Image 1 (cartoon, rainbow, N blue to C red):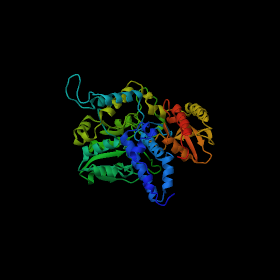
Image 2 (tube, rainbow, N blue to C red):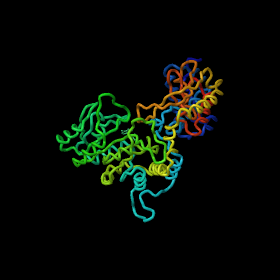
Image 3 (cartoon, rainbow, N blue to C red):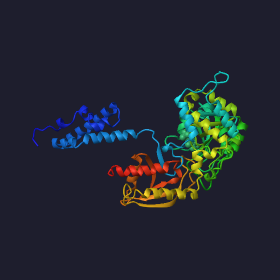
Image 4 (cartoon, rainbow, N blue to C red):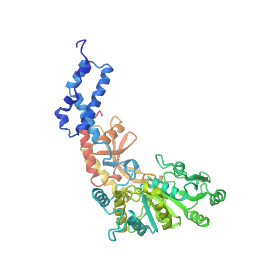
Length: 478
Ligand SMILES: *Cc1c(COP(=O)(O)O)cnc(C)c1O
């Protein structure tokens, strides 16, 4: 190698790089290829600055290094964003994995609403303007007996709208034991602050008595709302006391104040469906509504099994007051989610609640799941010489959680395929599965990868096998 050789001059030009037949055949847009090629060459310049010689650059270039790098990034780029995955974690409701898979008929209704014009804020029989969630409100009333309902973006939005609608610029009374954080940044005191509602905190972490509420109302004339929040993601045990919604409803009625109950998961057993008996003491929507509180808030994509939404059910005047609030416009639901929710509630009303994927997955028994795990293990054992070389493969009973901050102390008996790599690097296998095609999410526990069959949807077992077949072809060092 000559002294004068300048490694920078050995780098390919972007255009020359993109003319490579492997890249022209990659099916990626020119815009993306240019961006990735520039990035690739930028990294090469950094390596040169750090000491790469001209000879090393030539070897990299002529060995197809730049094309390999760009192709690799094209593949990664395709797998980003919202893409379907196989959920083998056993956790039915996982916020990170999109929570509830909706019923195929709800999915079809959502696709149809998205792809065309639709009846949204007009009554097609009278031609008059109406409200976008009139139909959903009617369906929810028929299903639950609530006088009226309103749908917003998610349960967090439902809480914000309720707080702002009833207590903006005033105070709301909440037990110290219910000042919860629901995953991420949803912390009750912060949400109240953002809604311009003063928190009137009462009681203690473990015990709050009715007299605490009464005293707070006597001491704080600006109190405008009594709030109850379900402790979705934790339980308090031992020397505890909390006020039941019915008692709160009575107090609110006596003092002329609205009472709101954030229920969270929206556990509800529709007529004719098998009860979700597995969920322990997770409160029920039926009981929350019957307690007499003015409004109950819950998510549409937790135990209801619909698309992302926040539902507020309750007394007609209370719901109308929320609908009249200017914030409603900012928080309301879009036509796609509305179409999916209408279909989900219609299925429940038609006695087809057991068909909803979330209910089906949550109620599958261990007896039902064991043969599925055995069959999956048999199918995977055909890959023992490929992607699973050196893996120990077995089938074992497991326990999984419903997830998404519901029933935190409930564990469902389930069955899983256990894969223990010889090198103990189950985390690496999990990473490759996540990056694979189709992408698979599984549980890593005690140096083994666990594929829990509870959360496999129709066709997922075949997709799982396909994912492992794809791994064999992939780069094991990745
Ligand atoms: C899950 C939950 C929320 C937030 O619901 P999102 O639909 O995710 O906004 C609020 N409150 C309670 C009690 C919850 O369980």
